[in-house]
Length: 432
Ligand code: DDK
Ligand code: ZN
Image 1 (tube, rainbow, N blue to C red):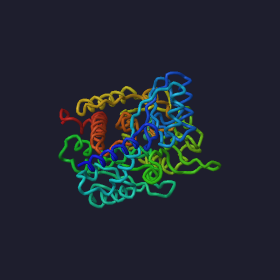
Image 2 (cartoon, rainbow, N blue to C red):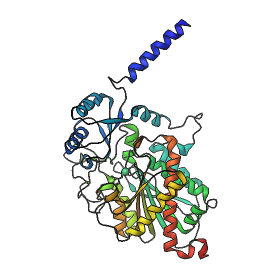
Image 3 (cartoon, rainbow, N blue to C red):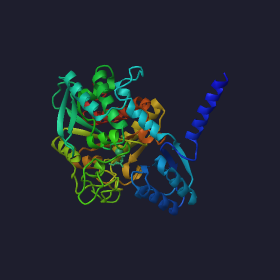
């Protein structure tokens, strides 16, 4: 018995050492709120000059007084950063103390522990598995699903969109959904997979999805930025941009959500290739954004709804993000996201904020939603899924289903509203 206790204490002492505050053994995510302009400057410096990863906002320029900053600090910079914050009287909270452990866990569960009980859709999947899933889904549903090659990435990976067409009604309109513009937002591709699976399984069982699919085809691009996504699984979990190089610098990647032709590269984007919000050399300079833009241009007469899925912060956004101006149909769009947020709150007791991008988060020119809106796809939306910062980009797999359910009900609310407005004959029961 004595040996047992001795072993216990040795073990416990080691544990204490590992979790002790002197030397961090894991990267952490800190929540920091600057109170003064000076503190804002210090934070901007910390996030650019030290080995840290800025989670929120996307770029140091958007750091402002009295607004939370979420910063990933790797173990080896922990002491330096803490000292710096302390010297400037900046207080912080530890949001996630074991970030590295979570990263490791989320990558490990890939092929699935058969004893873990969670199914395919409750896990994150690497790029190869997603390609395999796309193939399998198209093959197993030959009459209702088609894989359409819309282009390829900088590293020549194919960009497949799945076309869901559940009945043969002629002249159907369509909705477009893309996921995974930003590499580290893993919940986004996970949602696209769940959405396709849900549509195929619940057509004719759930009245909302049945009504939607009876009246429109749905195009789903599960991973718009495959090169970046691959990179988050192999090299850097926090990568955001694509992986295309720029001449004259070793900095890699363009922010695909700043690369579209909507007030391109104005305030809220950066011409610096090293920035997380680098706009690229010119609008649609990137093969990924060009592929999506080309597809939408060729199909703009049938596509009524554009939806792009991001994370995190729980927001339902409408144009514009590229200017403070309101969209021509602002009140119509606003009413839709308001209802969608209300439904999320009613069914899942979770809070989503909503409104025009520029006013709700920050100016973000060159985005796909604003561009699609200007192209004539008037019902254009960006969803920012869970969470609000607790896990941020490292949302655990056990949250995938819940986060997707929320996005699904918002999507249904909007799609049904659009059908009711634009295809009244097919609409609600009272019209029949
Ligand atoms: O691209 C961003 O910074 C966020 C998603 Se992470 C969205 C900004 C608003 C929508 C811009 N089209
Ligand atoms: Zn994003």
